Length: 108
Image 1 (cartoon, rainbow, N blue to C red):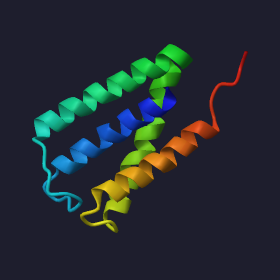
Image 2: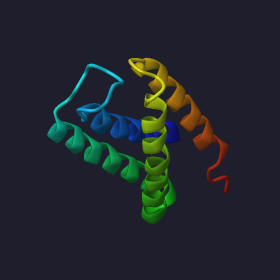
Image 3: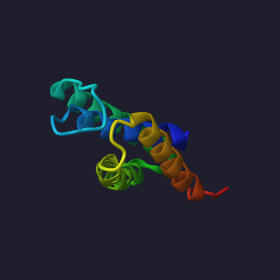
Image 4: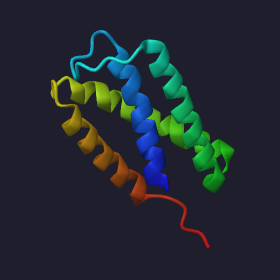
């Protein structure tokens, strides 16, 4: 289930970036208001899902940590991967999924 929440946070970071007028990653440009509304909805769903397993504060901090890692990674890697949205998304999801699988709660 953690992979689903990583995917939701990645999509939440990607949509406001694609709504920016200065992005060169894709020709698809969603409306800004819609992108930010979906951003808030996806982060809320991620916090809700993670708080079911780890508690509310831990879920919030986990989503905040993912957000703080994914947004700079998106911006920095998009500068080198012009017009390659699929390559960027798949490699970022792979990296962040592996990071999220390497840790976690292992109690009984």
